[in-house]
Structure formats: structure tokens, C-alpha cells
Amino acid sequence: METSAEQPAPVRQVANAISGWIDRLGVVWVEGQVAQVSRRPGLQTVFMTLRDSIADISVPVTCSRVLFDGLDTPVTEGASVVIQAKPSYYANRGSLSLQARSIRMVGLGELLARLERRRQLLAAEGLFAQERKRALPFLPQRIGLITAASSAAERDVLENAARRWPGVVFEIAYASMQGSRAAAEVIEALGRLDAHPDVDVVVIARGGGSVEDLLPFSDEGLVRAVFAARTPVVSAIGHEPDSPLLDLVADVRASTPTDAAKLIVPDVGHESLGLAQARERLRRCLSATLDREQARIDAIRSRPAMADPRNLLVSRVEELDGCRDRMRRTLGHRLDRAADEIGHQRARARALSPLATLQRGYAVLQDADGRVVTSVAGAVEGAAMTVRVADGRIHVTTTGTEEMDGEIDEQG
Image (tube, rainbow, N blue to C red; front, side, top):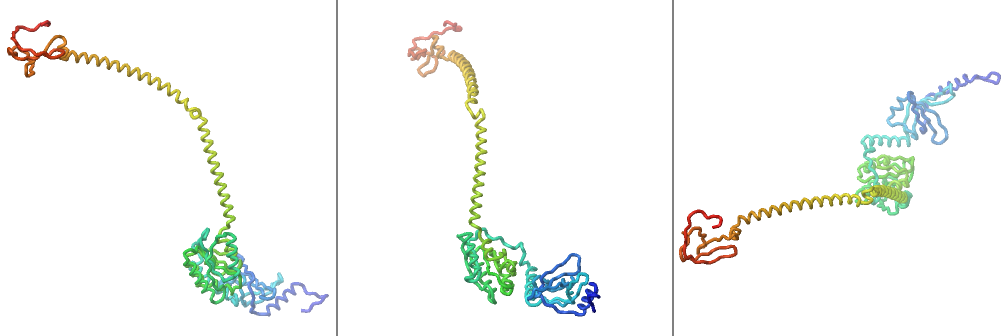
């Protein structure tokens, strides 16, 4: 296409020419790192940004949703891939993009893909389920720590934990934190600490590192050992962006070893402040309760009956005096009637008594055997007799008897 200042080409002609030139490039294989993935609702196209691993250059990539979803391993941001694509120039916007026809994971991307497949399999078994996560003890009796000897992670955990709770006690089991023996040594150390009767929580701590350095903490054997442990496990591996599989299976994930120290022991200053505040609230509640009860007692004491209890007794004393007077009168009347009745009965008894008869001049004659003689036939001349009078007995001898006819008159 020939152009000049006098005969310039319109924008559309230039754009179409560029599009034609790019179309003649054919299919190319491109390697790069996925910097961004965008799935827009309702569209059958997935948009990605492929970035060069060395230079600060990126190019848009479009991919059909069928191809993207059909990959064995989902494409994630940061994955290294090789894409078979057809360059395409969109003339309306003047933008270049690659239309992906095939996507393959390579290098670190392949490594991440394997870890992703392992994560999916273990997740399907329920090893990462939230319902099996155990809560950490508020103040553990002894803390198990698995880390490298003389490492920065060990220093961070010990110093920060001691700063928060000076009386904290650690049981340390050293192990390699990277390399081919790391996973096996960590598993062995975890077994020892898990069997320790005084260890209430186990912390696995390591500083940050590359994906390859953190591979031991995605080992399937280690993941299953943590899942089977009866002691709660805290994962403190790497820094905030690092996420090995150990973080998913552990009961608690700490972003850094320093953060792990904050999670496993309380802050003594904060707890002391909480205790002081609780004590003050308790004191206020108790004081309010005492004030309320004192006000209630004062209200009761202010009532007339409580202010001078003798007021109630005065009226009752008068009633008692009246009752006592009535009782005395009634009792006196009854005693008088009873005395009269006794006098009548005494007189009646005296009237019936033989002694009263004797006192009127009569006597009782008895023979020597004590039998009462009521007839002259019972008195033999010369026999000894006893006469019973009112005040004693008279011993007599019969000199003779005389019979009388008729009834005895009142004088005889």
C-alpha cells in the first residue's frame, strides 16, 4: 500500500491492512505467565492476560469457555503456560490479541497443576473440611514447636509468645524445613509431640520461600499425618501469599510465625485489662445490688409498724387485759358455783354418813365377833358387847334383855 502526504490512507484502510498482515502470521506457540483471568457472565469467551516472564510485556488472550473449562487442571493466575494461538487484530479498537486453541501447563505451572490436582483429591476425601477443625486451647499447658534449629521462625515464635505470656512453656522438636528429608522429619517430629501428654497444641513454623522450597509442606503424607493428629495443629509456613496444602489441613493457619505466636497464647496485658474491667463491672453490679437492697430495707423500716413496733403491742395489751379480766370473772363464777356444789354434796354426804347418825345420839351394838346386833335375840345374858358411839367404843356386858312391841317412835 503506497501512501504520501498528498495521498494519505484513511484509518480504516490502515487498520484493515494491519489485520490482513497479522492474519497471514498463522498459528503460533507462545509461552508466558497468566497474569489475569476474567470470566464474564453470559459470555462464551474467557479473557486472559499473558505476560512475558522476563520483559514487562503482556498480550491479551481470548479462549472459548469450552476449551478453558475442559482443561484437566484449572488455569490460575501466576501459572506458566504454553498456548497455541492465532494472532488477531481487532480493527475497530486497534488492539492485538491471541485466540487460544490449546493450553498446556509447563515448568512451574505444571508443578502448580500437580499441587492443584492433589488438593482436589484430598479435599474430596474431606481432609480440608471446616467441621473437623478443632479450636485452640485458651492457655495451653505446653506448646509443641516444629521448626529448623536456630531459625528466624523459631526466634519469632519464642520471643513473641514470651512477650505476650511470660510463663509460656515450649516443647521444641527440630526438623529440616526444606529439602527431600523435610516432610519425613516433620512427620516424625509431629508424631513425638502429638504423643506428649502435656502438649496441648503443635505449631509448624518456617519462614517464606519459593514454591519449590515450600513443596515439603504440600506432601500428601504430611497432610494425612496432620489430619490424623489428635492435638490441634497451627500452620505457620511462609508469608501471607504462600499457601501450601498444610495450611488447608491444619486446624488454624497463621500467616507468619509471628502471627502464630499471637494465636497460640493470649496477651497477658490484654487479659489483665479484661480482668480489671470485669472486676470493676462486678464491683459496680454488687454496689448497685447493695444500694437497691438497702433502699428496700430503708423503705420497710420507714413503715409505722417497723418505725415503732410497740404501737402494735399497745392495742394487743389492752385486748389481753380485757381478756384476762373476763377470764378471771368467768373463772371466779365457775369456782363459786363449784364451791357451792361441793358444799351441797358435802352436806348430802354427811347426812348419809353413819357417823352423823351416831352424833345425834344413836349407837351401834356389836358382839364379841364384831357382828352388829339388831335384835334382842342376838344378845345373850352375860355376853361381852361393844357399843360404838360417835367418839369411840364402850365395852359392856349384857345383864339382861327386854323385848318391845311396835315401831320405835322418833324419840325412842
